[in-house]
Image (cartoon, rainbow, N blue to C red; front, side, top):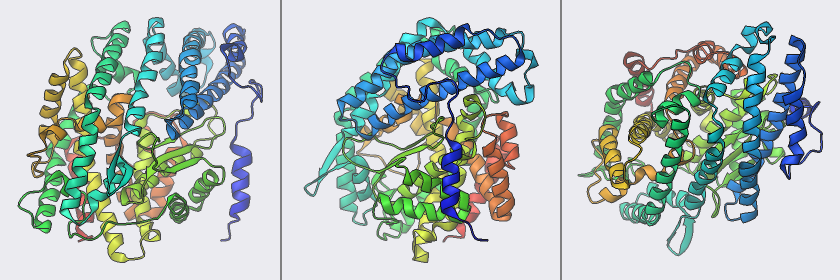
Length: 581
């Protein structure tokens, strides 16, 4: 069947962008006065029927889409260039001046909605999930937390500035830590050791600064929790993250299930690596190199080749998905390559007004970058597929659903990575590396999540006590094969590389939950590709209009943290790994 891709791309571009009916088309936010009239209108408007209530909610949603996109672009530009003080000032202006104002009005709007005599006339099937989110926000809102949230947002961004400035010099070249990390795949063990030490010594230079930053953040976060009536920030965040469909006890079950079912498999992989390498000990700088000491995989040369090949891969999965990425490329909604002064990490930022997401990452040409592109591309597909949902409330996804889309795309797309690898042996190596990563990331997720539980249950700890907590948890979930002797000081600060601990606390367990779901979707795909993709797509189109277990069921999988279920999934992954020997 012939598909006119140019026409299809133009169709999406002309139909996706939200048409403003309430906010002025050319509105720019330079002060509070620019947005205040719209907030006052929503606050004071009379609602005399259920239709009035729907129109009011629609106008509120349009306002939220406008504000969130404005904030998004400020954040995107700042992370693309952390050295530009003007960009930081523009972001901080929004955080300090606009967000507190909007937060106060949002609480008023939540009350107006919930207290309306017409709220019970709304279709529960359509609005039920959105209403429970509004009720939770109203329940947790405290006016005294508004300035704290503003302070926290500004402090949290300091992590990106500190990390973004980290570079090392090797062989006369100054490079980001991400780029230096490519040398950890070098077949020369001396090179790996040298660069490993350079990277970690550089991290240690800012260790005290990052310790002080987290101490400040924990103090402020504890105050937020206490203001809202909670003993600790962990319990507060479980509510604030709107985890309606599972409990803290379920999270602890997840930790234990990972330790019992996944960690032994991860240790087995490390032991096999050690035997293949023929070393007496497996050091931390030996975990990324090819176990047969083959040169590092080079799936692409630069950002342009990465996106072009990614478009081809997504087109192989489904032509529509390739078009989504092409729209992003053609409209400059991508910043893919690593450079000095750019914040670390990667993200897909949904933009609720233009309905084209933005992908940010730090590619340096390695296999992990390929996986990151597939991951963020999965998020992008999700953003496009849910773009026609009526309200922002329906599009704002719980991470357990958002990460399901991205992690599933990593695995599904791997069936087409021959686009990146002409050599069948390289393709096998890439797939094996990816599957080993799928296994190894689960104990790390449990480590980071449990570490945060313990930190916030004892919020008045010292930096030394924090190190002790980390050692306790990393010893519980870390590899029993990798030998860190001589590098204990590096291991003690490994948590400082994890952006989530600083910027988005407790947002990490979702990766583990979604990873299990993604494995199940991939297993379905291996059995019946067309049905699995249809189920996947139908789940993504729901946005957040259904409970998480129902979304997972729509995707054809279980929402399950149990040891037996996880063991079953791990058995499948291991069988796929064995095929790649």
